[in-house]
Image 1 (cartoon, one colour):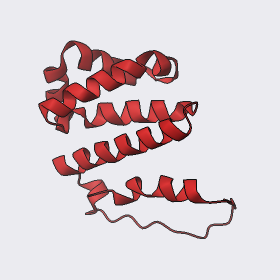
Image 2 (cartoon, rainbow, N blue to C red):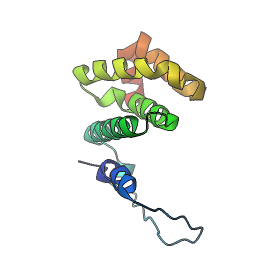
Image 3 (cartoon, rainbow, N blue to C red):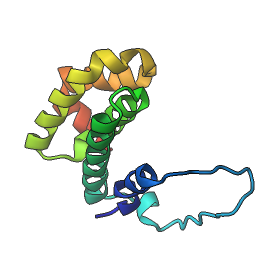
Length: 131
């Protein structure tokens, strides 16, 4: 899958007994203009969504009160919506609708508008967001 670190980092961090933080720069992340991150295709978005979905469920099960998990998943799911097949879109809408009350106070106006469009005019939202 593309974005494979998204599917492993949270598991590795969860298994750590101790995590330290330092202000010192010890790691430099080089981004190429032609990287996967800078030229996403449909598969990128599909993989990203399913990795976020797996992470969301893992964290939800282990840390159900971690509110940022719900907000993060909600926002990422909306971004991936246009690239998913019809069946996966239906599941996604059902899931994010079920957590809407929990996240709506933490979402910015842009995210609230996206959610409203997905609920009211999903095909229009998908076409506009893909452009």
